[in-house]
Length: 334
Ligand code: AHR
Image (cartoon, rainbow, N blue to C red; front, top):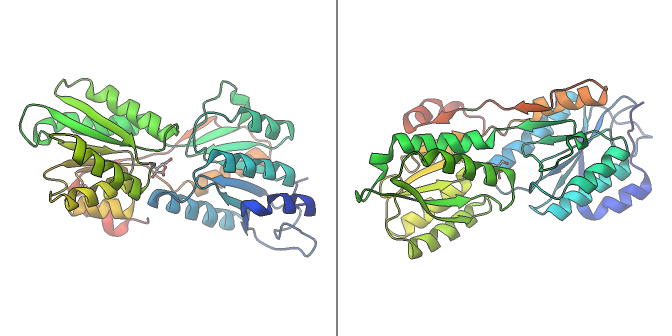
């Protein structure tokens, strides 16, 4: 039988985490979680935060899909802090939810809390980001992008367009990198995939690299400091659109034309990023798909039913040049 209700004690314990229950089909009067009947699946979802347009689209996809699937969702926003996510996961264990899903803020430091979930018999699904653990029995599956491949795709475009990207024509392509959150899987993997790929061309070099924490403000702040400290910047490689959009603001404020005086490559392909690509302010975007909700709910139903699932489910993604973005921008959902 599915575990469905939140005890009064557990509800009190999690009050300070601002968890939000939503979704579900019907609401029984005796159901303290506010959810459906005996066969309703309850999912505790610990989100990273609301740092980017990508994250907003991802949260919306998860909430909409839970509602559609009749899954009771208890949602928390960790505000980019690992300790908040660990607290949320512990509260889900106390609530005895049917399944826990989360997108880890950083890669390391999860074994203890995942072991607690395992001992409580609650399956865990990783979504969007991976954990760095030697024990893969601590979670059922990992649904999300191949971030190394995303970094490689960004690097491939630069290698193919190295000559045009040497904006000052001095023979060197100087790249500044706006990294995602330090220790987060997409920041580590996108840097690695990019570095490995540009290594094939001696003219391309990452001359400065700093975290902008996946936020627009962070990207702007770091780009302002790069513009003050670095000579001859040809290219910005930003680990997401939001940081790239922040860099555009800094470049324009410095009296330069983004996309021309400095080439810009980003990852995500959210609406604002795609618009900047169409407008010529970004030169290339590698897609990272945030619409993980439908697949996540399907996997949740399978693991709760005790079915075997693939240990790794990779999201399909593409890339966009300026012309390709112009063709699809009107149909973009996010
Ligand atoms: O984990 C996915 C990354 O996290 C997205 O690229 C970024 O925008 C988000 O904040």
